[in-house]
Image 1 (tube, rainbow, N blue to C red):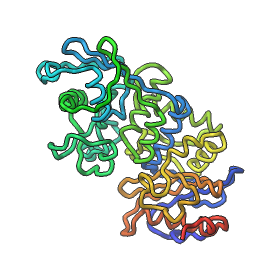
Image 2 (image 1 turned 90 degrees about the vertical axis):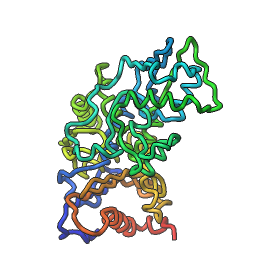
Image 3 (image 1 turned 45 degrees about the vertical axis):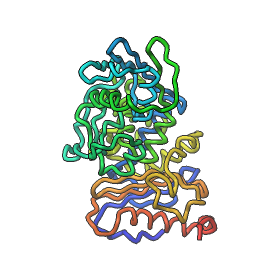
Image 4 (image 1 turned 30 degrees about the horizontal axis):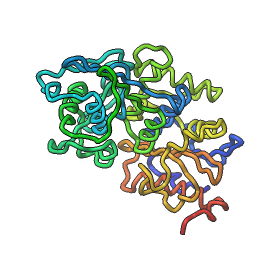
Length: 377
């Protein structure tokens, strides 16, 4: 494959790998690069490997007089709809809903209370894509800029991130959410004995959400939970970084020589290479991990909603990634049994970085005889 960007003034790295484990096309594939949200492949897969797709995150919700207790967690998918169901199931009254009466307590939290990663750019902390990370959350600890907007889904949040900002107090956000949802009825009754209920969130649903819309919040909650799952002590970024790398070494059979600071890819202290990513994705596929790979977006869906549509029939599942000056795309092409990773760093040009990546993928697919027959015309 001819590299049309060979002399361009930015860093380009890519790797295409076959089922024999051989790199069939590559360029600077061992060069350390920033992965951006391709980090979510690592976070999601290690969670999938350690916990299993059917794993449930359990929160016990109890009410006694005017006190509500949240026990366990975490709750990365808790939104207005599920909070309304909890409110109705517990039959919360107007008395409970008075702000000066209602008390919200938490216990046995699974992740620590360090809300922001020290390796993040704090200039980003005013934006919805960098919310505070907490064990218990409502609407990914974000709120709409338009204070009159009460009902919105997590999908709405990710489709218009510029219209949302992080909340200052995650716990108060849940408390205020209970007050706001009390007047709305869902029409769905859940059985709760003795003023308590069990709220469950399945890992497969978290992974689907996290990978499809590239949710930073879910990624960081899962990442920190990794060290809780291993040690049964509150999970932290520091301990989970070590555990994630250890698990990847066990899975791959070698040390990939990567640097990890968070689970979402927001940090510019994350470094890996495209050879490692293509190898990881191929080994996931070869070890019956396709149920994980299929959580990654396909053309026309999620963060690939407007990309790669001519190759929809090639059955591509791939994770996008973007930071200022950084773009990434890594995944699996089922029609060709090929894994790939393409990453651009240090880009200051006028052409869209996604176009550069899509051009490289387009050239690879076009040069392959089977891909030409699969292209939608």
